[in-house]
Image (cartoon, rainbow, N blue to C red; front, side, top):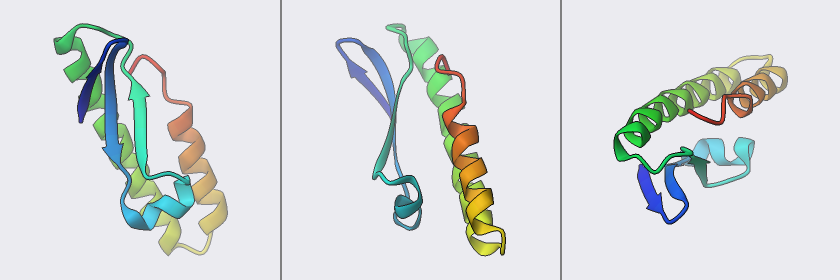
Length: 85
């Protein structure tokens, strides 16, 4: 979801209930670092894709025997995503 605050646009997406214990939160908020609506939409689409990949990685890791290391890697990869996306 694209949210407009005075400081600029932000991306917001709810975290599925089954992934909340892993991520320790209910929503993902990320500054899109722009006041331009069109650029914000593009960046929000990219963030949606990244969060979808994160949820898929967590889902796969939760169903595998290497649960802890895979989960940690998925979360770290997401956290290292460029801040301008």
